Amino acid sequence: MELIGIIIILLGLIFSAFKVLREYERGVIFLLGKFYKIKGPGLIIVVPGFQKMVKVSLRTVVMDVPPQDIVTRDNVTVKVNAVLYFRVLDPQKAILEVEDYLYATSQLSQTTLRSILGQSQLDDLLSNREEINNHLQRVIDEQTEPWGVKVANVEVKNVDLPQEMQRALAKQAEAERERRAKIIHALGEFEASEKIGEAADVIGAHPPALQLRFLQTLQDISVDKNTTTFFPVPIELFTPFMDGLKKKQSGES
Image 1: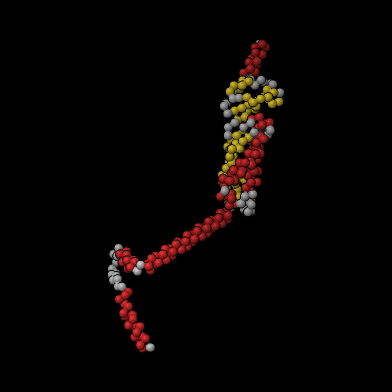
Image 2 (image 1 turned 90 degrees about the vertical axis):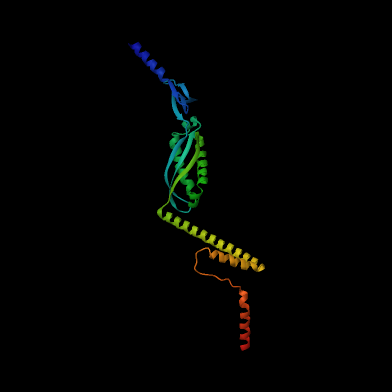
């Protein structure tokens, strides 16, 4: 019976020595407490009692950065949250250089988010989102590189503004739209005056053009069903009467 028990224990130890790692997993092997090698993927052997394995995933981790209260450079308090994309490139460093690389990366991203956004203006935070994301990615990636962690991307998801700041921005946007509308209207009036001046020069150089324009205006008016009748009378017909009136006034004087 004792022999059977010993055999069962030995078989259990042999079977427990075989480990299977998936394609995206690696095993950091320690031999008597010292780093030995990286194994995987597939079937590996870990000698019980002498070797110990710590499993590391190489897949990209998507981590939410909790909302952070940030005071911007122009003294506006906002609440900002972000999302972080990173993966382990060196399993040995991820286990040996930091106690918990997931927790360390999360804390580092929070502090970096507060530090970087605290140096930015509110307008930059709202309009230059891509530039800020790239800056955050570079800073966090430089600090996680000794841990064997590669930060691929950082995205600021949402910026919550206080209600009074939202109203102020709405008024600013409305004033900006009104300013642009007035400028466009003024430019339209200026261009129209230029065209009218050019038309007057053409009509002045060609007097018959005024008669043709007058007839065109009558045609445009007659399109609608109007009850008013227009009789075009040349202004030259009134010239003799005006000359006689002037002579009469000069004789009386």
